[in-house]
Length: 331
Image (cartoon, rainbow, N blue to C red; front, side, top):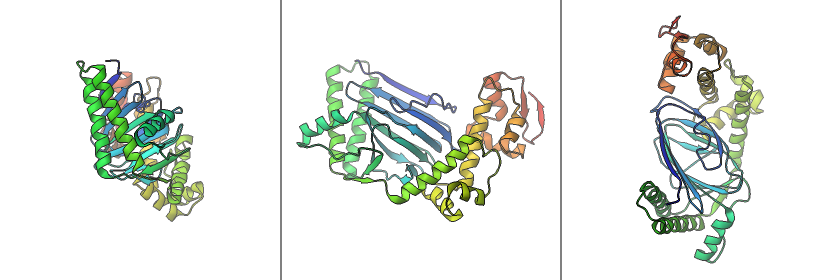
């Protein structure tokens, strides 16, 4: 068949395994709250383009750099909550076209299904000329949102799913696969041709700037303790009200909760590191969680395992753990 295809389901959070969730990308993942911790990822690489799919049962933040040699066209047709990309709420029928090497900030507040097609600009434009007699108007940098007729978006989704079904079937012959691929490019071309793109609006740029400032706090580890609203305002170079508004409108949650979830992910990363020697209690307190019983309960709700379970899975069972009442005992 000659079409590499993979279909993986994760029932434990594995950020390293998710880094290349989009073909030739580097995407960092964090969990943003409690939910059904099940992530299904499908990847198909064909001779003309790659198609990736993620079905996230939980709230997730994904940030990183998309392929530098190709366009990435993304959509999130199914969601239980809100979906934001680059500070803008994404409608269920909308497509987002990212230029080569663009960065992405993707947030889903309660789980969502996303799809992404990675194709070189030259190949997509050549197909558009053959089908439409003209090239498509596509962003040279950054990201633009296209909102075609919902029927066209549905046709594109159906072609993506048909390709996955065929790729998963060993009996599929190359000719049938090629016809399916051509149908997908046809659907993609029509959707982009009939849904004029809109650049990133000014409000989205402001929201993304503020999110970037908060992420700099995360990267520097300065969120190891609660950060008050006045400090966040100063770090973001914006009023307290604007910081709060920007995060709610661009990421679906207030800034302090964003940083709290970042601290939970830092704890998880440290406890998941086989080389780490710090105890659960010391790790939790280092990242600003002083009420150990509440910490252990919230940690389990997010990562579907207790902190001591994480340590035992990675480093072996004979380590210090946090009991439900917050006291420390031997594992």
